[in-house]
Image (tube, rainbow, N blue to C red; front, side, top):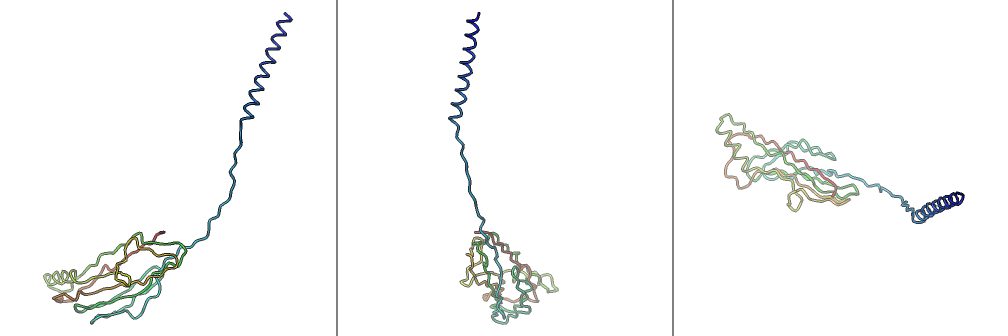
Amino acid sequence: MERQRTRKVFVIIALLLIVAGVTVAFAALSTTLNIDGTGLIQAESWEVRYENLRSPATVTGEAVVETMPTLTATSVTGFHARLSRPGDSVRIVFDVTNAGTIPAEIGTLTKEGITFTGLATDVTDRAADEALMAANVTYTLTYTDGAAVAVGDTLTAGQTRELWLTLSFNSTASALPTDDVEIGGLGITTIYVQD
């Protein structure tokens, strides 16, 4: 009996040594990995703006600028001009500048859609005047080379581009309206986004 007991003790001790050996083996196979570092957000600036409104406006023919626009960093407002005959035009000149450090591009450009409201008392004449003006009056926003301002146009950091806002009565128009025609819908919204 004593022998059996001794044998059991040896078996238990052997099992404990095996378990301890396996634990040491697992501990020997473990590895700790660390990642450590720092970062920096560099200060940049975003500032695309209008500036440098040229005065007076450039007029062609009998055109008259009755009210020069008011220019702020984000808008050109209050523009009012009068065109009288074919070939008349008014050009407002100003700059768009990227005064920030991040390149910009035009992400959205929306023109309101020019409208014409005839003031003739006769309904037929009014409709004919509106159609005549719709076919012969244009409103454009271009660069000095004549290229239309468009989605995707870029402004690098520090770049300035001159813009021409032009309202014109087509020089090839073969008729005049019977009465005054009010022009509306001359709004253009340009949204610059990060390039």
